[in-house]
Each structure stands twice: as structure tokens, then as C-alpha cells.
Image (cartoon, rainbow, N blue to C red; front, side, top):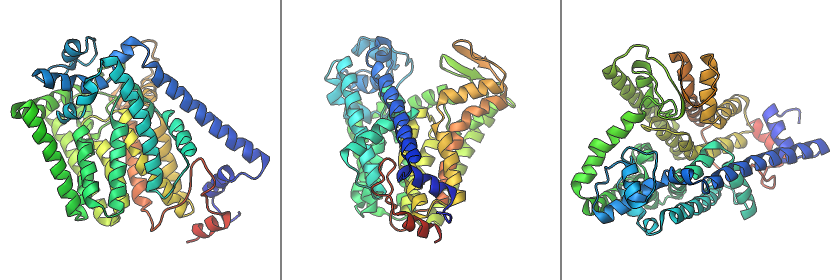
Length: 466
């Protein structure tokens, strides 16, 4: 035991407790995580009961788009107008939906229900999708957990803000995670066509994960590339046939720029694409509790240029990293992180997609005996990922010397406002750690909540000295 580092010793004490103190500590830790998960689930369930919360769910966008399609209405109308017309409710979304017109086709079956039933149905689908995602992520790093273990991990994950918010708002990120992990598993088993088709399907729900396509290009996965392109083209061909070519073009040329402009200076939007706007246009919140800050120097053309350069530089650095990694597994996870980083809007629940790269980091660390430097880097990134958006706002207010006494906007300095970019810093840390922890051949058989698959202490000790 003396030869093992502190991280390995701590993990062994938690995963294979031998003393009464260690066993008690393990039970308390798992108990606290389960309580936190139950609390998150109760909050998500509460959103199904309170009428205002039901009406303000993001799933209303997917519900009214097919209705607009069937009734020949303009899909670029504000969501609030379409919701009033086809769902009979009032919602806070007073702009067109930024979700692609292909969503209107995918959600046609759900739109056949009344709105409240559709909300309940999507919540149930999301819970099932979460269980599937947990099972698939475990498989991706070499585990085959029991259903009980899967259910426990899924419940614990709901205590993490991004997962809870995705359920709470009726969002699509859990489903996109399932598709991306499926694409990763298919690519790992040389089923390129399936991998490309699943990535293409995720892009039809939201184009967030498009940087993953660079993995296919750089590693010359031609069949995966072709499958992705075909699925996307077929999806948009159907959209053009049903919506009309002009409506689809308007989505890209008018709707997306309009919605992006609303949130390009939003402190809750931790995308790197907001950096230029924060520096040279200022920070302004669209929500009930937020902050606003003056720019370093006001120039909207410069703000737009800097934001675009930051995105291009991030993609260029990522492509260079892919060429150096020469490892499809790590590259896939890295580009998921990059996708969340450079998405024009990157809300808290977008971090659901990072579950796969987080699992890859843990697997790599375990297979190498938890080396100090990389484990410390992973721990720091993990702590930052656990901090919810609201906490970053409170930190920014504290840095500005302003106690939040009620809802509203609070003026802070530019420097204080940049604290709300903390989630982006967490993602950068995760990406850097993933590069450092390039996966070795073979997977580490370590379960977070079950010690059955943990290697014997002597095996871990031998791995630490490799």
C-alpha cells in the first residue's frame, strides 16, 4: 500500500473498504449521493405539477412545430404565438425556435397527444433514455453492470444539475447523448455506417455535435462520413418537402442568427463564442436573476470578429490535437467537449454530453494507476463541472460586492462578469485532461458504485509502476 499514490489509496478505501470506518464512509457517501439524486428527481417531478413550469418547458417547441407543419403555419413564428395557437398555453419563449425543422418531423407522433400528456410522455421517455445512456456509457469503457447498478447510477446522475435541468425543461440532450454514445460504440466495433447514421440522427435533433464529424474526416472513416451526410440530407430533404424549401433556408439565414443574437451576451451562455461579445459589447441577462457588465471597449464589429476567431482557433487547436492523439476513442470524446464549448448557445444542460468523455478519463486514469498529475487535473475539472450555473452567478455577484436580495439584474465589473465563463473553463480542463489521459489499449474495469470489477490491490499497484 505504501507504493500507491494518495488517489489510488483513497479509491481503494472507498471501493474495497476493509475497516469499519471505511465501510461506514462508503455507505455515507453513497447515501448522500442518492439523497441528492432523489432531491433532483423530486424537483424534476415538481415541474410536471406546477402549471407555469409545465407551460414554460422547452419541449413546447417540439410540440408546436409539427402542429405548425400540419396546419401550414410559418415555423419561424415566435414559439409563444404557436403555443397559444396550438397548445392553448402561454410561454416565455417569445422568439422562433432555434431547433431545426427536422425536429418537426421527428416529433409528429408526440404532437398527436394533448400538450400535458405529451409533456408527461417526454419525461418518461427521458428517464428511459437516461437508463439507456448509463448502460451504454458503461459498455463504452468495458463494464457490464446489473440493472440495479444502472438504476442507482442514473438516480445519482439526476442530482447533477445538467441532468436534472434536462429533465426539468424537457430538453433533448439525454437523447442526443444516447445517439452519440451509440455512434462511439459502433465506431469502436468498426461499424462505420451505423456510427455515421447515429451521428447524423443526433444532428437532426440539434446540430450541436457537428464537430464530432471531424473525427471521421481526420481518421478517414469514409463510410461513416457518407452515412452522416446521407442521413442529414434525407432529413432536410423531407423537411423541404413538408415545410417548403424557403422555410428551411429561412431557418438558417434568419431564425438562427436572430436567436443567437439574443443570447450572445447572456451570462448563462458559457459558449466560447460569447467571449468577444462579452469583451466588446458587454454582458446582459435575459433571465429574472442575472448580471450585466460594461464592455472593455464597445465595438460590435470587433465583438463579432473576436468571437469568430475564438471559435476558429478552438477548432484548429482541436484538429491539431486529433492529429497528435492518433486515437479514435479519445478524439471522439474530445470533440464532444469541443462541440459543447463552441456551440453558439451552451446552457448548463448541454454538459450532459460530457458524461462520455468523463467516463473515458476515469477509465484511463484507472488503467494507469491514477497518476498524480493527470488525476489532479481530472479532479479539478470534475469539481468545476459540478458547480451549477446559479453558483457562478453568485460568485460573480460576490466578486462585485453585491448581495442578491431579489430577482433582477445586478451591475458588476467586466472582470467579475467573466466568472460566469467558469463552465467553459471546466470544459477546457476536461478536454485538456482527456488529451493527457489518452486511452491505452484495453479498458479499466472499474465501476463507480460497485467494487466487483475493481482489480485486486496488487494489480493496481503494478499498473501504477508502468
